[in-house]
Every structure is written in C-alpha cells, then in structure tokens.
Amino acid sequence: MTTALYAGILAILFIVLSIRVITRRNQYQVAIGSDGQILLERAIRVHANFAEYVPFALLLMFLAEYSGLAPLYLHILGVALLVGRLSHAYGVSQQQEPLKFRVFGMILTFTVLLLAALAIFMLYGSRAILS
Image (tube, rainbow, N blue to C red):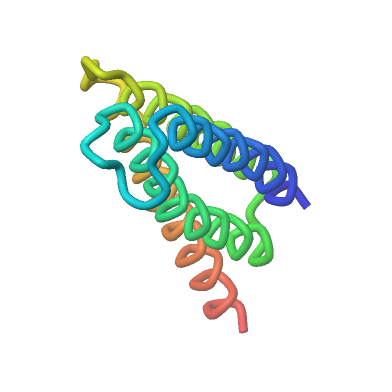
C-alpha cells in the first residue's frame, strides 16, 4: 500500500509539529491559546493547518489507490503532499513570513486533493462504463 508509506512519513511530521507547539508553550509558559506570542501562534497554526488538510488528502489518496490508481501516481501525490506541507510549515513558522513558501505549500496541497479526487472519478467512471 503506497498511501500507507506517506501516512507514516506524514505522521512523523505531525509529531514534529506537535513537539514544536509544546516547546513554544513551555518557552512562553502558555497552556491555552497563544497569549499574543507570535511564534507560538504560528506554530499552533502550522500544526492545525496540517491537521485540517493532511487526513483528507490521505483519505483521497487511499480511495484512489483502492480504486486502482497506479503506484507511480500515488508516489507523485505523496511526494507533492509532503513537499507542500513542509513548504507551508516553513513559511508560516517564520516571524517575517516569506509568503511564497506558504502559497507554494497550499498550491501543492490543493493540487493533491484535486488530482486524487479526479483520479477517483475517472477510475469510478471507467468501471461504471465496463460493467
């Protein structure tokens, strides 16, 4: 299962992002929220954005794989998702945010969502025509 490989890699990245939030919380002595600490707020948003998009992307990748999408295309989607999430995390984590990293990360993430969804439609459609 190709998607499982990327789920494992992205789970490790999720843990890293979680540890970054915990570290900032300890640094600023903030248990809930961000208390106006910009780097903590950025770490929280990077972590939350990851949690908002990655599970759905992985679900779509899994469904595309289950529907018969070739491993090569799944690897392309998985690498794009990983690079997109790393780019987004880097950009948003900076106090003086270089917006290009955030934008590039979201473009890659949205592209993975769209291409996986289209693959599911195409694979479903080809099966419906054949049956």
